[in-house]
Image (tube, rainbow, N blue to C red; front, top):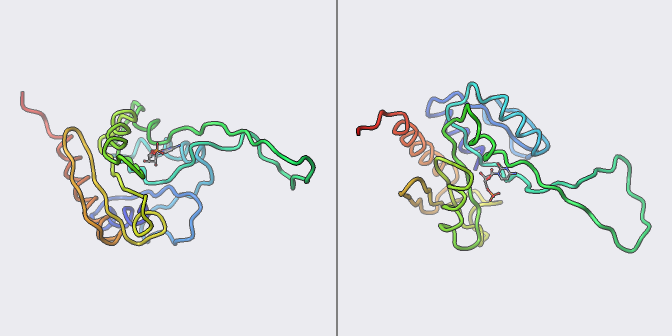
Amino acid sequence: MGYALAAAARDAGAKVTLISGPVVIPAPERVNCLRVESARDMLDCALAQLSSCDIFVAAAAVADYRPMTAAHQKIKKSADSMELTLVKNPDVVATVAAHEQRPFTVGFAAETQDVDIYARDKLVRKNLDMIIANDVSGTDIGFNSDQNAVTVFWAENQQSFAQMSKQALARELVELIAHRYQQSKAPSIS
Ligand code: C5P
């Protein structure tokens, strides 16, 4: 979905930087693609882009935890059981949204139940401007599929998009994000 959004934003006229973890799909043309391997690298890379970023869309499925230590050589078999200690990764989108140079920030929420409750909770907890939620309890949309269906939440509003190709959905999402971004910049009437 992140790659489809990058291409759709480019087609809408945006100058796009795509920060990507290891994937097998090729980077879209005319998009500045920066490759990272870890959540910490992704955060460093995102923070380095903030001064030139108006809209930040966090579509990556970043691991919440990482192994505390990494072996540089093959681990030899010995004991019957092994313990793996995991430590929390930084939350990339929440860190960006808390930054003093905060761009208009959009997150994703992949949920298997109570999608709206969890998505709205993340919208507030991570201090996002919008959140795009999809139900990943089925196998026909979302991960490992070219199709997706989402509901977008912001402030008191929401808008649902029925199942369609990720490319078509990305165009709809870019239009909605651009519209909300413009409204966030417009002076409010008191
Ligand atoms: O909490 P959860 O992982 O479901 O939140 C999803 C949103 O948070 C996505 O926008 C994802 O890109 C972002 N995220 C992040 N850093 C993490 C974990 C998730 O930016 N370590």
